[in-house]
Image (tube, rainbow, N blue to C red; front, side):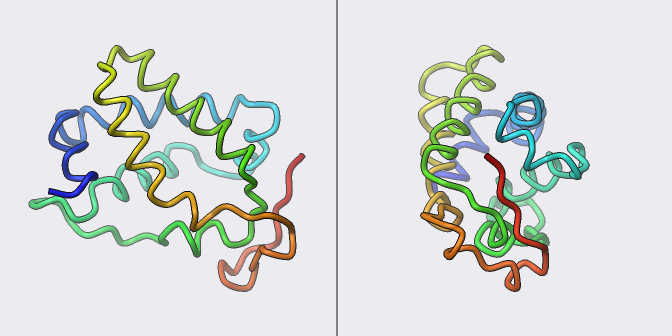
Amino acid sequence: MDLGAQLYERIGGRPGLRPVIVRFYEKMSAHPVLGRFFDDVDLAHQAQRLEDFLCDGVVGETRFGGTYPLRAHAHMLITQPMLIERVRLLREAIEELGHPPEIVTLWLRVDALWHGAVRKHSVADCRPSMSGKPLKVVE
């Protein structure tokens, strides 16, 4: 069983995923830097997309129909320090909802699987044409 399916099963499916995702986006949108990525984003829709993405490939769930991370984030300058801060906020969201350390570790392992697809070293690494969106740089 892959890591995503393990997380889905261990946390109790969508009902277990949803509160963490909502809390996580609340934290992200309130962050002084990372929150600026969400200035023009419908957070409820974004949360639903992440939930659907995390359920992709789980038996009995519909296939993810959205844009995968590489393309969805191609226009954004997301650096390693930003990813580290994002992981900190995700960890807080999971822990605040009372999940045990095993769930925290498993979720962070699932999350880390796609970091390489979105991390950039400079603006030159961004590909707005791939996402069809204008370049987005926050500092």
